Image 1 (cartoon, rainbow, N blue to C red):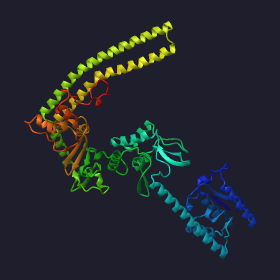
Image 2 (image 1 turned 180 degrees about the vertical axis):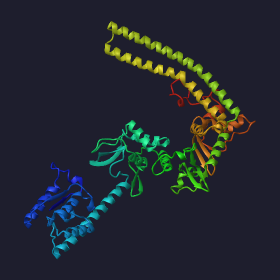
Image 3 (image 1 turned 30 degrees about the horizontal axis):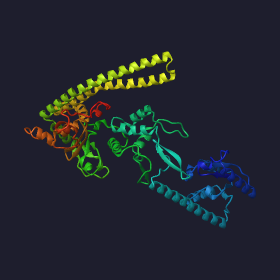
Image 4 (image 1 turned 60 degrees about the vertical axis):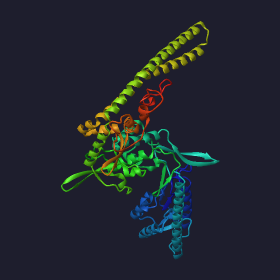
Length: 556
């Protein structure tokens, strides 16, 4: 009986013969050995391209043993070398004992081993050498992989969103990784969508499938991401530009697809949903996703507060705690949910701007609109004149073409240029009509919310409170049971910062400073517009570029 084996697919796919080069060579050597011994070959078992080190995972070997047990027509098993059968002494001993149970001897075609004491001694020496070599090869490979990781190289196939490439460098072929231009934007969208906390893994997989995210085709055609693949992707720090080897992280040479803050937001949501990544509706709360740990923020880290429930003393208790506690980097205490509900309501009360300040902002907005309406009127007239001139040029070109004064190709080219200029002017004209109106509406809505927000929030239900929080705040930083800081969305951040400024106190000394009592993200753009000295008497309230694409005639 012949047993032939190669340990990797690359040793098979090296020739026109599907068996490659190694297996036919082993077969010929074993056949010569059988001829020399005068024994008949009754069968052959081939293990092509499998690197399984465990004997129970080798299908051909198990089939051969089954035949030996049932047919009992085998006296010898011939292998090319002992290492083709086993590469460690334990497996070698087990195979040898198994074969001896059925009175079968193991013969090597190229090594002098037999049932004699000398042959068995040689057998033991060769088995030990094979194990030494196998472990040495493994250690060498492990060292080289570790060295590659330390230098930022990617081990194996790059994850989806990247692609393995080969490039020439100083006459050498270098295997490296580059961003996949087709899949990388969709991978980033996967993180962004999941960070909204509106998708389960199953729903996100369906959404990405509709957007066209597929695996890279290889031996199998491209297909949508499975939920397991997607969950692995969302936790893979490789997308941060990190290479991980045996639990140790190294800065990779590849370009990151996801920034750290977005990645941490995704991890916080996944941690809150549990190992099955199932959205727990029973744990939903209108403050979920808004609260962040201020103690960690002061140390330069961003961790969300996670909501949990526990049972005790005959009831169920809900609380928030910092996700940094799960990673043993934060020592802040657990905070009862009702304490934070009161703290957020208090923030709305503190953010209520003084009526004099709101009246001033509205007055300035009206001044800006009146001033800009004059400029807009002049610009509209100018655009209308330009459009009339272009129409006249268009008519003249058509007349020249009819008289044969210009070649038709040149006429078509110039008519195309005129059409492009006309289209650009029409777009600008529409922008003039809409820009200031939308900007004024945005300012008025922001002022109204800050003017009546506390009363509105106190009367709102949970879903309405969630909408108000998301409209007003980007982040609320919690320390103990209080809101220590806030990052507001535009334009609320500018209103609150201007109302709390020293310039506002000087303008309205009668009612004292507006002090929200929390740390705010600082902005002074509106403060300069309202209380700044010098320059135009009608400063712009909101940058035009924040509302519509800037043009050559809109003031900045």
